[in-house]
Image (spheres, each protein chain N blue to C red):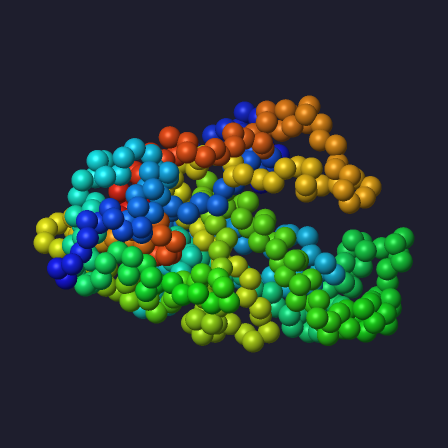
Length: 117
Length: 280
């Protein structure tokens, strides 16, 4: 997908970075400069922008925001696929997968993929 | 938990920490990071079950039933099926799972016989109006049997099992283990473990050695005392004596509370996440 904006222009990316900052302190962009690159790689892999990814994981029912089970499962599986095609060590693959999981988690999408190490 | 060991033996016994009852209560936390590959000794699991068996129980019915599952004896597919969205990681990390149920059939199977056992051993005595005849002619047919047909029966039985589970939970900590109560996938468990229809599922007690420090960030936040406990009537808080609070701090029942953004806890979780390969 060619028409991806700079990632920090997306509201869900800001939510993610704010969540990381509030929960863990520090500067999430500077502390791990790969973070945004990894998310961008996943967006290209999934062919979706960040806001669309989150949008596809939630739905509104009776005026309340709910997690969309199918969407969540689809992205959980996509992350596993994404992670498995990363070249390098198992630790590197785990980091790439967990970075994307972190993006979903801080946007309110519960994911527990288990131990990746 | 309650120990009669002389003081000299209370700190270290056979290389293990031994605690007084109040400290066990104080140290309990819901442990969510377990050492995934460190097995739990079978005798410790038995001790946990023995503690549950001795719990207080209404009408001596003993609704509590438990099925112990060693995680590594489940196939990968079975373990995957057992995971729930919220407890998936806990289920994966904990080497031992104890699935708790309330057996609703027990009262009508026993028909008061366990109450009569209490009469026989002098736990329920004529001084308090108890006799075999009272149980046979009044208690079972007029109280217990109708109770089993009441919509509130499952609640009563579950509450009772909760007492047993609590003793099991505290005993896990007394044995130097960590534990956490969690919901579980009841349909899959029923199928895999051949659970009788009369048993209603309650919680799974996940057990293992903690991978996190025993402090685990401190005692968890609790609602204000005045909102929880009353004296004489609702709305009139039970007066909390700070001298008692201080005594309980000395006894390690009331411990350092967990605080938001605790740097030590944040670092601990980061280390665990790196070691176990978990997202931040």
